[in-house]
Length: 265
Image 1 (cartoon, rainbow, N blue to C red):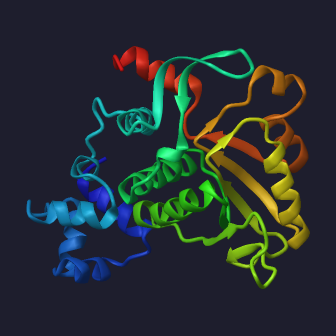
Image 2 (cartoon, rainbow, N blue to C red; image 1 turned 90 degrees about the vertical axis):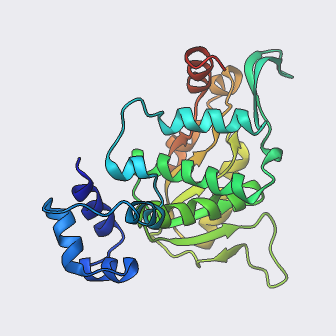
Image 3 (cartoon, rainbow, N blue to C red; image 1 turned 120 degrees about the vertical axis):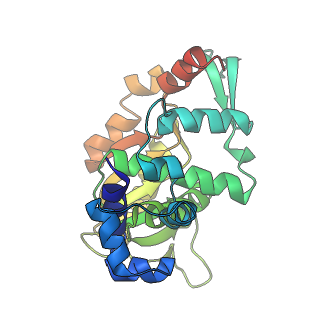
């Protein structure tokens, strides 16, 4: 895809006219039109401004994808680099051995949470998930969903309602902060990890008492459901059977192993 076509796609995703984008950049809408139809190219100093406005890199703006890492590979590298994901051999309480360990308590900076939000947004975009509402489950899911909501708008121009589900009611008895749930809302639930899905089901049942919502999807950093839980019918299969909701992991164990083997991590 040429840079002109990229600019047109990104502009339209944000709901901007050529004139509106021109005003942001301090140029005419006619200049934008020439870029988009391929009769002219942006000046070099404009490229970083355009890339920053659309929340992408200059390479992405130019359409360069050769040898680019997938967002999953980028996420694994990011997690390892920040000490959130450790690779090696770890023995779990169940007696099983895992080749990695995830510690989401190490999300401690604004830079980390902003980046994580982008990966969640990429996951939603890649899987073409249809939704009206983004909901985070307190506690970890609150920060993750906030970052995801911001990234969806900044990176892809997607606007949606947003709320956080509390674990206990506030002083006014409210379980949800932000958007008030309505019957028929298609909700994407954001959380950090899933091991059995039992707690998640309890939270969803509480929310469904507030309104007859549809669970469009559940997105977690990683699904840690073990074989024992799967044999009991827990995990993603339980959520799909009970709510018709598919569980998406930003990364899977295979992604971690593949990056470790292929990238010498």
